[in-house]
Length: 340
Ligand code: I3P
Image (tube, rainbow, N blue to C red; front, side, top):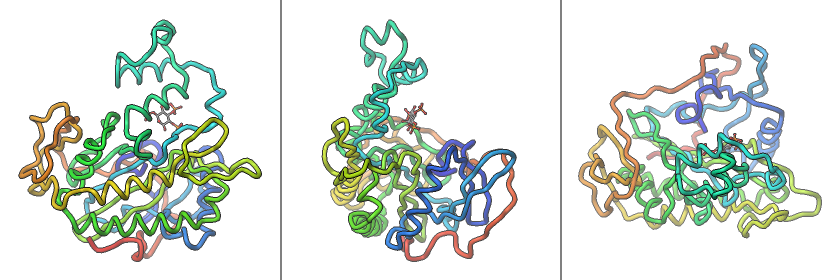
């Protein structure tokens, strides 16, 4: 996640052009360092600028991908068919918070036993989330998105079917076919680089996201969030496309990227064009009558959640105020951002 759509207490602005991300343990820092050493991957992940201690907390300083965009549209897409670490398979601790989150999505989902216990394991919850969303079928799910001048939309847990995904992507692009074409070029380039990556040959990339950003002038996509990236056990190989079975460490990252590319390719041109900024956005709605996109063409927006927005948005940042430590001449590298 990024500040604009992620939990605000995880980030602090550093800048200009950089953010601080709260970091527990050195895992994510090590991944950014390793990815930064692989020249071919440098351009598809935020630049890592170092570790920072501030008021007793550890942050990693990263390129602010939003820097240089003007009130952009942002989408966070969680990648992979598996979103939990293999170690969760052995974790039998049942959690009441996850039971409650499950109930909120589908009150019928818990078993009789789980209802009695009022708790579920993390594995059970994570797999439930995978099946409720497009993670299981598509190898990606849309976690959050933000439209220009509107608060983030995060109620997307049941965007699951190919139609749901298509409608949500179409709504996000708002009929901007030139953005779709640029993103396809970028996503295919990412796939090529990742397929040839040495790092990917011996790591599983679990729970990472592709972040898509576009405004009137530019469009880009990056790979973010590496808290659950792990080295594979010695001698084990994965192709990032095969089905997961306990112990095989496949996470379906590249399968998801294939499906994401195909989903963008299959979008009809000019689908779900809206007349600029609307007062609300609806995706995947069970409330199709509250869709406020104007002039929907080629797609019916049905079966979705509705989000009404009234305010201009607001980069949410944490209350931690941080001195600037590093500045970048250009927050977003020009070769990774394509004119929209
Ligand atoms: C959370 C989400 C996170 C996961 C978190 C889940 O569910 O899947 O990825 O954190 O586990 O609760 P939801 O998306 O429905 O809010 P990790 O990626 O760190 O596993 P947690 O509750 O143990 O933090």
